[in-house]
Image: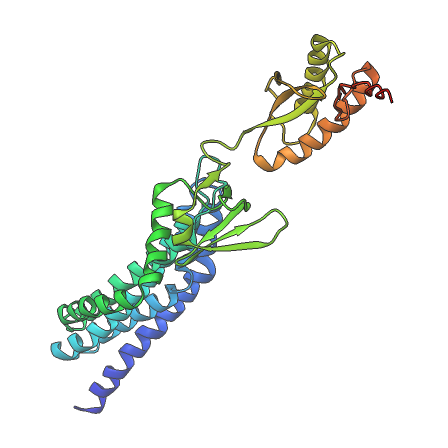
Length: 350
């Protein structure tokens, strides 16, 4: 091989790689930011995710493309071109798989639901990333001429042994998938466990479910235990919750008057307090002749479970003040005891 052929063999790939690098930097610095600004004005988030994921590997793709074009024009023999093409294609496949995994993960992490307020669980995004990368890795090996059949066979045999050794871990993993697929428990939901613990579902991972309780501490429970627990979901089928406030009044009070005054106070709560359902009409229902009072429930409605605390707080204050102004009494616990007195026996005569 003469000197000119050697220079051509080195020059064309180098020029192609350099030109590709310059084109990739230009695309990442100028083209993609302008496209991102256009994508921000659309309601669809998919274009933003794709452009964001493509900013990283675009330079690598441009360099590999320029290098391949340079090798093609360098006059290499076909077997040499094929030997170089396979590793380049394998690198492209892995980088595309990585980018696609990032896109799929970002799409899964987008808030779900009609209002976009329910975040997705990490277990789904992790599983999607692992699946895409595994497929990309197998395709890259196939491109390099490596047979993937023995690998899949070895994974099948080894997977059986691993499954027997990691029964608890796999039980939590599949329980997490079952919880999500059932759709009865989602990140962002406010739930109550049969133990009495309450809180918002923060995340569902491959092993645990994290619940943020109202005092702002975290409760971590294995997925297998959560799937077997009796759970109340205060977010489904809708976030609005009825709130019952028990009240008792004296037997001497006019119940019609009591009902009218109580409804007026409850209406102010529905109209004024943050988190109350504005168009809900509160009701009262008498239910018990108790020892010291006639008891009834006041039924109001909150936008979500945690709004009940402020509503109940304001209702108790306003109702107490209004009852005092209207002369309605809330009796203390009391009980009337009737004693059957027997006169003492007369003394016997001596």
